[in-house]
Image (cartoon, rainbow, N blue to C red; front, side):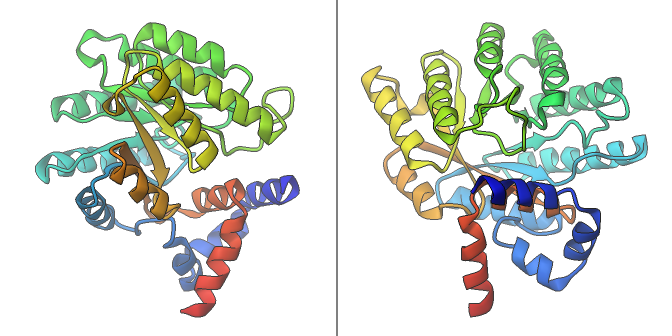
Length: 308
């Protein structure tokens, strides 16, 4: 499995394969399991359907590193349109944003300015911005930007961030974020990190995930536990019951197209569930990382592709 994971992550950076997949009918067909569609309206239609199933949504306009300031502003415009549509259609939804898509690798100031404007817009319409976490070399910069935006009195509570349990540094990061009152989405991590930065074994990542989940659940802030791992979910449930933490104090988050049965089961048990709904033509890196997280998805896709 580690070899398969590393191979899939390496393929996620292959420009030639990405170009072929994103512009082929076969590629688009395969991606539809995990990607809501190519257009903004596709995402909004899926968001409405998910809301009707009793779950909230976070919307992600797919894309990562941009090559110009114009591209960064165009990517941000999609999110501004999403925020307006969420408000106009009264969707139970917020947005998830990658700072590299907002120009972080071009200019830290550019990415921070765009994140600030998006957070102001979200606050004005009663929504929320979640800054996604990317590779570990960007972790500190991402956290610095989120903390500075959140420190503005008018924007407290309108921006949050993602922490990846496989990084050694994550416990210290969560301690700081809790001190600042910042909402966290906890996930395991989907990038191929070196062993001097991240836990190399799944059991180690799982143990750290449970430790960090405990820290989040015991805080008074509303946090999100992003996982499809039933062992992690069971651990969170047990802790919440032991500590008498109300089910409306936190939420589970899951990816669009992954473990729909588990999503429905959690809703029926009275837990808050939010589905991460990605969309857009730049879907290939995201799609490959989903396969890397759970290579069994390859078998699932193959079976369904040849059945249809």
